[in-house]
Amino acid sequence: KQEVTQIPAALSVPEGENLVLNCSFTDSAIYNLQWFRQDPGKGLTSLLLIQSSQREQTSGRLNASLDKSSGRSTLYIAASQPGDSATYLCAVPRGSGYALNFGKGTSLLVTP
Amino acid sequence: DADVTQTPRNRITKTGKRIMLECSQTKGHDRMYWYRQDPGLGLRLIYYSFDVKDINKGEISDGYSVSRQAQAKFSLSLESAIPNQTALYFCATGGDRVSGANVLTFGAGSRLTVL
Figure 1: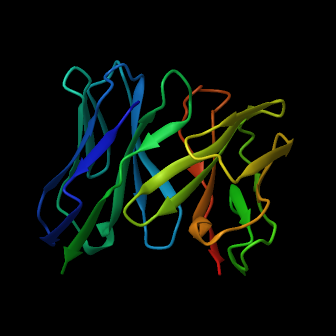
Figure 2: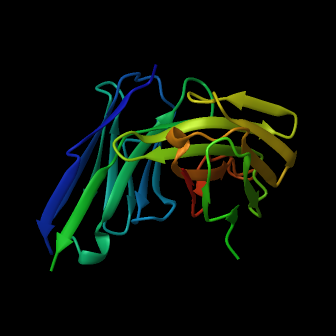
């Protein structure tokens, strides 16, 4: 069974700092990995999708990396802003299908 | 209008009542999913469907049933609600027909409280 773990569970940083969120998964035979953002009481918004053939994917101040062999992905947020405060979740496909297994998320607070 | 619409957004009900949560989408996606989210447990998959004739159980399907009435509609039913089904429920769609990418689009969620 694919297990997804995110560390840390919560993180508080001052505005302007660069930060890294971590995601690990037990079955390295994945064909992609996704990072999502969730604001309190809201749905999830897809941030980045990395295909297994890629090592990095960038969108604005966000950069996600994928190392399949070690079962790890990182989400790097540059020059953090208070508006980045949210929960960030990573997800990988369940087995060979298209349904996703999610980590429990990292709750990020960026203070002014 | 939202790409993925869930109704109701909030519902309070009593133990033993039948509840239906509805989901409709305008993305044109074939794949639809129901998840529940609980504090400390994260998102867990209840059911998923890859087309109108394809329904699959997820990791926590007991006590739930689903119906894929059309390509754009996927409803989740609790035949006899119990308090531990109190949770935030999300519908999601995926499967872009052009790119093939499986980026999921989520609805805003349905908060269900069972007393």
